[in-house]
Image (cartoon, rainbow, N blue to C red; front, side):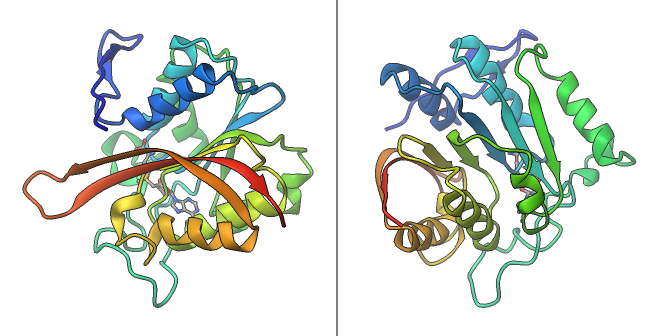
Length: 241
Ligand SMILES: C[S@@+](CC[C@H](N)C(=O)[O-])C[C@H]1O[C@@H](n2cnc3c(N)ncnc32)[C@H](O)[C@@H]1O
């Protein structure tokens, strides 16, 4: 299903037209009256903050009462993919290092965060930032902050290794629970279930005996290339391990 919607953002510009799977997540929660009270939105893969802004603006636009956003990024780009796992040629170590963008070139992570926060329409939804590679920040120290379960986990992190680290930690620590929505920006970056986010999801669903339902798939051709882009969204029904 291809949804193309355009809404005005707070600056009067347009945003999230062909990225509508994220809008789908917000409206799905509302339409199905899924309680998000006491739960948080987890975003993995922030880079320059464009999708964080979209999500934030959608929460405000649809009046979804999100209590807190947890945002994770190394701000150093991608790590090395796990040996033997396929990836696309542009997903090499260091890709998406935000410092390659002129406006962030000389910034510390704190300055990057400040700049991203300044693009948001307001400061009504608190954001907790975790700076560093996922295997360094998703630790006991993070758990001591008493994180709440997720009502929505958005992964925009390109690689199998990163997705495994995130999903394993989230399932193991009961931060993904029944009714959590899990969305994948990069589902189509490799053949399905051979690498990337899709293989990580499959393996973690097997490991934790997860029953999940696919509720959205958005696929489109990459202009001028045989590749396609595919986003997927699941809702978790049951976790048995
Ligand atoms: C494609 S970019 C995300 C794009 C972003 N959502 C936007 O709005 O532009 C992928 C991001 O994931 C981060 N990332 C991927 N794997 C990571 C890991 N293992 N630890 C920390 N950050 C990671 C990279 O640093 C990068 O910023």
